[in-house]
Length: 478
Image (cartoon, rainbow, N blue to C red; front, side, top):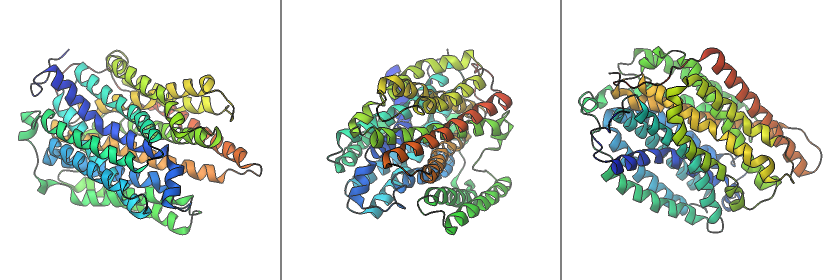
């Protein structure tokens, strides 16, 4: 295995460095989990209407997706440490503000949006740092496998955190502000100012930043996600279709603008990666299938089985256990098994949750179906993120690590936002004339059938069109 990177002086510093880089993914999951488990209480606190309820999550997911579009390229221009430290400071501030916003729904939505921006900056800068620090090989695979495990672990910890403080909801966000402030201090000392002199020397200036591409991408993606999020609660009014169509047209303009940009937001080297469109499509579909299943899985525990928020959070414990186990196994697996098999297994795992939840009723034992379903489904984000992140960051120069990471995180964030929006449309459109609980269960099954279908399509595309070689020890591509 390769030696420790020169910028990291000791094993403890390396472990802390990888841990701090993984906190972007962990906080992304955490800030979803602590709200999802309290969505009914927060809806009552804020007095939201049915059309506004999806924005409890949608405001965070939308801006997270928009943030990573530009923050990856900014990390390459400004340096990833500066963006990471700023991200922790911004996220701490807006968690503090969120704690005071529970009597104002509009301030709450704005605060959640600002949290999403900060998390996007953290994840993009983290991938940039890891990509610049590690050359392709086992050490890099282990670093990215550790980062992959942080999202499900963070979601579990966030749900427990929210469940413990469900009677003191402002302190969910006050305590987050304190914890993130400590991470801000830690990042100042643990993350080296320059992880690789070659990346620093070749760093482009802000004058080369693709401002037009950033504007078009943010408008296009924002319109599509806003239209899908608002569509079902608003009864698919004409304006929701107009938003989606306008977003698609703007993204088409973005594609044309990228071809003319001096330094495009999306590195052109990515398109030379074999099967690149298929790889991203498989990841997008698999993560979307997992996200929509996971969201409605908690809805099942809270609404159908009527368990307390803390109990529902504890039900997610297999998330953390499998996530930590994958940290140790995935890195070695990528050097033994071709990456497309790992990606296809992750796609199938994204449908495993639906398979185990479709037969359930209000009285089904947690240990009979829920626990194994949650454990298997967690393989999806752990395996797929590590496989795709290693592939993309290995395929571009060090000066494009942030941009490559941003592309992956954009796919992840928008996949969650779009598929949860589609799931909401399916759930509300499911017919039923009996008791509310039966209607709700029938709606959940409709969403899980959709999740399973998307997972199977993702796996089929992976088997047919994706070929990723085993990861090898070598020097970084420059």
